[in-house]
Amino acid sequence: MQVAGLVKTYGRTTAVDGLSLRLVRGEVLALLGPNGAGKTSTVEVCEGLRRADAGEVRVLGHDPRTDHAALRPRVGVMPQGGGAYPGIGAADMIGLVAACAANPLDVAWLVDLLGLGAVRGTPYKRLSGGQQQRVSLACAIVGRPELVFLDEPTAGMDPQARRLVWDLIAALRRDGVSVLLTTHLIDEAELLADQVVIVDHGRVVATGSPLELTAAGEEQPCLRFAAAPGLDTALLAATLPAGYRVSEDTPGGYLVTGAEVTPQVMSSVTAWCAGQGVLADELRIGRRSLEDVFLDLTGRELRA
Image (cartoon, rainbow, N blue to C red; front, top):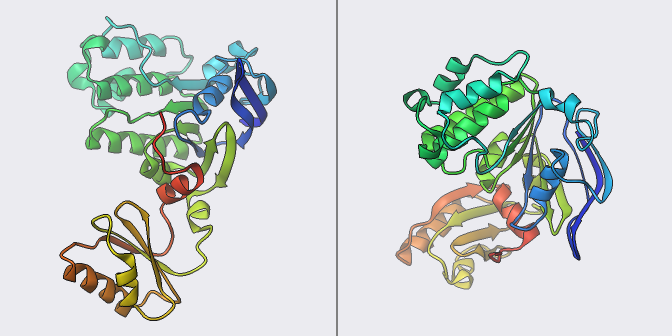
């Protein structure tokens, strides 16, 4: 899939402003951004649901807006918020979609794989949010697509169901299926994605693998840890050798940088925290998390 210079406007509002990305076969691409960044508009254009105002979009070599017949059997879509008939049973809904495919997966196997066996006959409207998400995922992949759009695929799921979906996405990638994933769970993107595209205000602000993005900008060795917010970082820095700095990047998230992260530096940090009566938690040496990168690029304020 190739998107080049995509522009999408709604009246005087530009939702997508010259966005470009590329998804190759057998890769998972995570499209990340805060609310209002243009993710949904981008995906809807790629799915053929909206018309681009400028730019070029090619999905499996076709125009998604005009080549529905060519793309329908090759693309799976899992929209956020379901899309199933409210009164139909879970297994029957999956079977209905399977009946439209030339070579579908076995419905009974897929129902059991996604842990829906106990609710196979339950009307869709009576399923929990997580169960509805799993039905939607089954409908997206039952036709053996070459490309799948997954919008918040684990929203509302418990940890066991979320892990099951993660394993299924990894299996899709191994089978050569391309996956475009949108999610607000940064750890989910970091775990699953081969490539990450971060967008803000309709523009791409960073792209690369999770490792490339988290390694960028680390000019010095560093130690990160979590503790109670509002610690006196100047007092902590005073206990460390000359040249070390301490900052509170996020409330309760601390960064120690210097020439080298030695056992003595780590010991000094934990000892100082203990002396203040607080627990230094989640200590890690080295690169930032993908969440750190995301917040640095898109801002840390809460958006409506």
